[in-house]
Image (cartoon, rainbow, N blue to C red):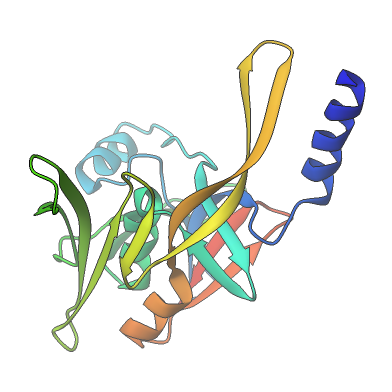
Length: 213
């Protein structure tokens, strides 16, 4: 029976599903050049690394979901992609074997995260509403994204909840796979909000999400 369970999990991992997470790196494509976003995309850190002739660390750790032709990302990884979509970035030229340089966050204020509390009808019990406010500096328009994770994930405004296949290993030799409800933000809707000609390209073979300008 144990062997059958392992085979079922393996089959699900191989076949995947429309709401399966994919791990990707983030890069900007501009003027036929490619600029990688480092793990630490702070301009001061990046400038120091480049001035010391260091190679900035990059990793494919951003989790995206592709479903129905749209790309989704969790709130934790949203800011990294948002800055490129909003054209809030600084490019640093440095010719490498596979890319032309690096990109860091810009200095415009396009992202703000906060937590608001709401009282419920039960004394002493509150709901924590997590909120991201993004700004389109070209139009001064604002877009509010609101959700809560407890007691269960709920999408309140401009986001959605999807069941994502998650595989965990609680201890060595034991693998468990199940669907978990997860709050996600539709990146295609964010592209539409800015309307600045930016496009997204998910290259599955390379494991990269490109922001095209």
